[in-house]
Structures are given as C-alpha cells and as structure tokens.
Length: 556
Image (tube, rainbow, N blue to C red; front, side, top):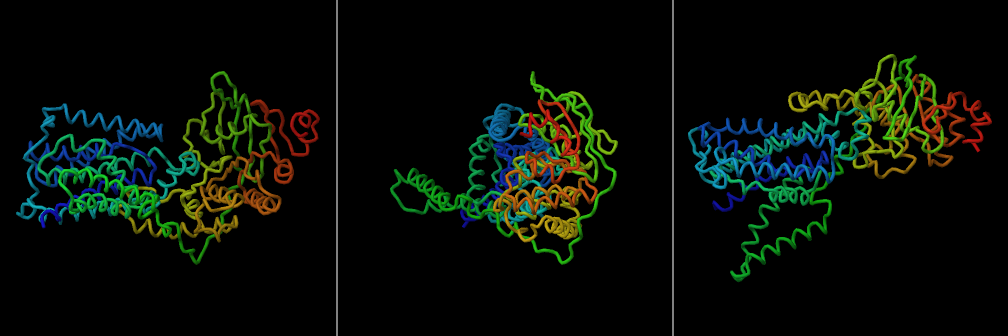
C-alpha cells in the first residue's frame, strides 16, 4: 500500500512541476530548459534552512519561493532579447551552471554527498514520515499550485501570454509590455517549481545535485507535450501518465535478465504511439477556451477626438552604410486618410517603424498631439495613442477572432497580477464589459458572426478585417495600416474601403501604405511619395498622379 501511496505523492510533485512548466512552454511560448534548476534551488533552500539552521516548515518553503522567483527573473533576462533556439541554449547553459554550483559549493550544499537528515514536516504534532501521512499535504499543495497556475492562465494576462507566444511584435503593437510579461511568468513558474522542490526535500529527507539535472527538465517537457501544451489539465494528465506508466510496467512478468531493458523499450514505444495518435497531446488547448457568449448589450464604437495629428520631422535611419530613410517630414492629419506610396524599398515600412517605436531614428523627432514619442517603447506609443499593423498581418492564429480583439483592449485589470490574484471578481466583471466592447468592434468590421472561430480559419479578406478590428480595440486615435487592402478582390475591396472612410469620419488619424493606385485615389485625402528613403512630393492623389516626373517614375 505504501508503494501505491508513494507513487501518488510523486504524481502530486510532478503535477506541480508540469503545470508550472506549461505556463512557460504552452502559454508564453518560452522554450526554456532551466525548470529542473528552479526545482533544485527550492529543494536545496529547504534542505539548508531546515537541516542546517533548524527552520520549521513552512518557513524554508516560503524563503525558497522568494529566492527561486528572483532566480527566475534573472534567467528571464536573456529571454527579453532572444528567443527560439537561442533561448534554449542560454537556459540550458544556466541549468548547467546551477547544477555545477550545487556540486561544487561543498560548504553549503554538501557537494557530491548532498544534504542528508532533512527534518520531516510536522503539522499539529503529527510527523509526516510515511507516504500515507505525507500524501494529503502533497495533494493540497499541488491543488493550490494548480489553482495559482490556472488563475493566471484563465485570466486576460494568460490570454496575453498566448498572444505573445503567437507573435511578440504584434503583442507590442497592441500595447502589451512583453518585458513585464516575461519576467512575471518566469518568476511565477520558478516559484511554483520551488514549492515542489521544498516538498521533495522534506519527503525524501535527502537532496543531491544528481536529482536536478537537465534530464529532469526533458522529462517534465515530455509530460507537458504528452498531456497537451497550453492546457493545464493536460499537465496533470501528463504527470499521471509518466509517473504511473513506468511503475505499471514493472508488474509485467518477464525474465529478470531482460526485464529492465524490455520495460524501458515498452515505455518508449507507448510514448511514441501516444504522440503518433495524439500529436497535440492527450488534452490539447480546449475548443471551449475559444468560445464566448455574445453579450446582450453591445456599446457602439466611440468616435475619437478631433484635431489630433502625428508628425515625423527630419526622420533619418541608417543601417550601417545603408540609408533607409533620410530627412523625411510626415504630417498625418486627424479626420483624414493619408497615403504613403512609393516603389518597393522606398522606405515606407521603415518610416512606419520610426513613427511607432519599432525603430529609433538616428536623427529627427516624432510627435503626437504635441508630445514627443522619441525613446518610447512600442507598447508605450500605443498607449499614447498611435498603433500600427503589419504587412504580414501577424494575427494571433491560435486564438479566436474575439480573443484577438479582447487581447488588444487597453487598461485591463486582468493584465495586472494584483487584480488576477487578489481581486478576481473585479476582473470577471470587467471581462463581461470587455466582451461587449469587443463584439461591438467585430460588428463594426462585419466579423461578429466569426467571433468564436479561430483566426487561423478566416479567409484572407476576413484576416484583413480582423487586423482593422484589433487596431480599433487598442483605443488608439492614430492608426497606421501597412498594405491593409493588398491582395483583395474587387468585391472584398468594396466592403472594406467604407470601413476606412468611417474611421476617418469618426475623427481618427489614418495612414495607409498601399500600392493599389485605385485604392489611393478612392480613399486618400493626401498622399506622401517616398523614393530611395526621401520624401519627393506630397499632395492630393490627383496632383501626384498628374505630376510628369512622378508619373514617369512610379505611376506608369
């Protein structure tokens, strides 16, 4: 019986580790191989504080949580600038560093001998010295950790994490601070892993660095993948499968000289079969997570203030010896649609990047309604009132149409962890209001019927409309669209172009990059012509198209 209870204790510990790891891998898309280091730091912190300094449970656990969360922030710092394969390499290196420190700091960690005689947990005079006695504590703590992870994943913050997983640049373009998001999710994931480490130390009463190597991280990654990334319930399933399956295989009777290797082979084959049949995991991201009931009342899309203007003065940008933009002046008036045209390589997208903070100019200034935007980060510029789209759309294809709009709504309480954990009722109330705001925007662009569908399932024309809806959701007054109408058939153009006219009529400041001259002639009040990084002309579409020099260079 103790054997079965021991397996259940290990399931509880692995459930904590897998669900916290899923926050990084499945929700935030941060492929970090340092989770065993968090687990180990929590275990060693408890071992040192309990065995050496005599601190009683849960004090070592709490101190370990704080220390490991701080380590998570440190490990998150490389993730602020790199991602993908580079993040894997950096976090793997940090994992190796932690293991090396644990092995060589003999005065504190015991080196290769580890730390022994860690006191058992005592609660209400009862020493938890058997699996049966320890299991209730492990189960309660695992449930609490799962609730913490679930609260994060089910909140607007969790939605923003999934959007960041899809595309970091697009998340910044809707006003989210990816630096704060990465630091927060690393700290929370590390803290939860530390809790599992503390329980591990008290349960086994012995820790050594050999238990916290990168092989354990790979094991946890397997749990997440088998269970299903982006679904915390899947992490629980993955923990159960990988903790129980090896033990269950021990009950298969076979000759002793081949038993261990045969069981290992069977274990591998079963994992391969599961992944082959369910490549998305046993419990993938639930379709229900992409569905919202439409609210009964939907507020209208509000008109914006009059008189706003976005200005770039003397903008220049050099990449080494290449001059992408040189001395460009751009003024985009409110209530009007300004077109930015020119041949490929003229510097149009670079100008957009300069206006919206994705690039900083070597020379020149950007002002919005009299306020300098120079030096501001992209998410800060969005909050100031200037938002932009991208030529390659950058939709959050793994989220629903409605979620693409919801994630862009500004100033959500659910984006702040203090509200997520300490005032969830306020987050829920605001979420109901935000559903109405998001549905109103989708109605405005004609996508309300597709609200519950994944963005990946939209047609190309609908994707273009969703880009408009997402920018509207930011609440920005100045909206910059990079080729928003390119590739659309005439019937689709006839449906989309009136939306831009209505936006301008509402008082918004609109600028579009476009190659379709019929669209420019139909939509734009004024046009700026760029070529070779310089502004060559500005005027109405008719004025520029009747200019002989420009006509020769571009319009023919």
